[in-house]
Image 1: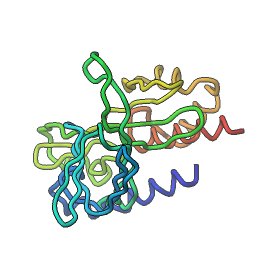
Image 2 (image 1 turned 45 degrees about the vertical axis):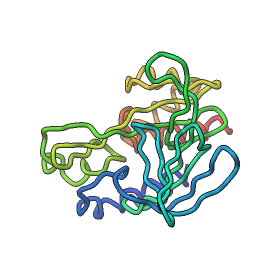
Image 3 (image 1 turned 120 degrees about the vertical axis):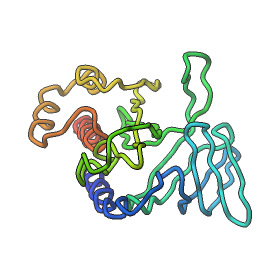
Length: 212
C-alpha cells in the first residue's frame, strides 16, 4: 500500500515535465529491459507500441519484438518518474481467438491484478480547460494538441483477464468480499472508480485487505 502511494507521488512529481512535453510516452525512447520468450535479456533504449503490440530496442541498431516473442519488459519513464512494467498475456481483443498482447501491470496481489492498455484518443478540448491536475494521465484525461492519453482497464482474476467498463457496480463485483471497507476507503480518500491513480490505490487496498 505504502509502495503504491509512493509510486503515485513520483508520477505526480513528473507533472511539471509533462507540461514541457509535446509527445506521449509511447512516442519517446525510455531506458529499460526486455525479457524475451527464450530467456534472453536485452538492455537499452525502448519504445513501445501497444496498438500493434510491438516493442523496439535501440542499442547499436534497432530490433523490433512482437508480443509473441517477448515475455515482459520494463521501462523507466522519465516523464512520470517511475518504473513501468508490461507483460505479454493471451487475450482476445476482437472476440476471436486469444493471442499474446501487451498489458501494463499497475498493481497486483495474490487475488487480483489491475492491468491497462493506453491509447491516444482525439480530443477537441484544449489543455487549459483541465488545469494542472487534468494534464496528468495517471489521474485523469490529458490533452495535447487535440489528442489525449486514454486507458482501457482490465482485471486479472481467477486466471482470466476481464475488461473493466468503468462502472462502480462492476468494480465492487471484481473486488468482492470487503464492500463496507472498500466503500469507506473510497469515501475517506475521495477516490473515483474511473481514474487511473484512484483505481491503483483502490485495488492495492483490496489486495492488502485480503492479506489480513
